[in-house]
Image 1 (cartoon, rainbow, N blue to C red):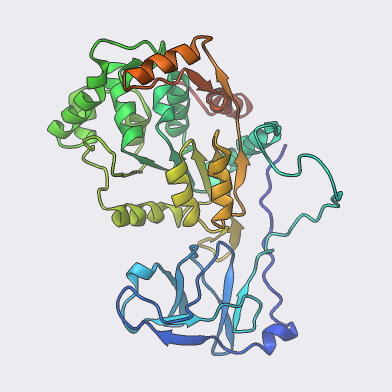
Image 2: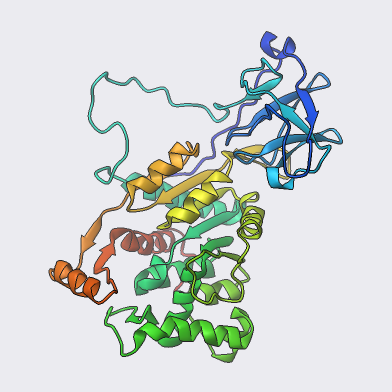
Length: 398
């Protein structure tokens, strides 16, 4: 199956509605960090603004930001970065009435004939996703040479040996351009490399070790003693894992902190807005975003990812956005917030032990919980490595 990018078709500005549309209204921001009344908020789609008789594209779009006109160009600015006097577009129509046009079908739309009543029109955990994974294999091979792939990851990857090794191979072989995560992913991945556990459990056998609940704290403490993750890797001779491979292959990672973090690691952003800006520095370059098993970071990244990217040569291409999560709430929340172009994969969990209920109950009474379920997407990500390697001979373990 050959991969092809869909072609972008710009609006036909020779049509009467574009010609007769008025120029947008520009009003000054009244104070720093605040927009004028009736400000226009951007969407994930390409948006054009008629200024001095010319339609201008807001190139670096982000949902819920405001368009600001300066030096002949429309800039996309977060409200918290507005300065008093910035010229902000006002108006809340989308079809030229106020000189604003939202181009939602630039990459074409699929108009399928649909029955009035039919089963399985939307996606759920009962949907087949094999084709989606096959398309993802092809997309990643294309993006390795032509794009910028951002992976948004929850800590689950550091708890399973196979998933951890599989993603490490993706990093090592050039399929990862940036990682967005939190303190937990990095902490437990480094714990796995340092002490062979994640939250005190062996990352392969899932057996709890004596005083294992100290292990992630011991790891954080040692990293902080070393002064940085990179120094820790050198001083402790760490030679495996996701973060190790990111450091080794110079793949940037952004660790956004939360109110419940232990430690945290030195590289974790404690200021949420600094973390958001750091995340966006990669998202604004992204051509593909893949979110895995994290609700908070997925929704945060989805909110700042447009459906398109203006490339260096001026061409416009589609941004691919995948969300892989066991929780239908997560993916529904993503689409409810306006990330309508997200491709959703909802894998099933399989229970790996018949003693699951008993173990969970026992751990609950000890103020600790243990998940004995292994997500099927772990094996699919491992298969991702295998398929890419067998198809193109480009992935090697190590």
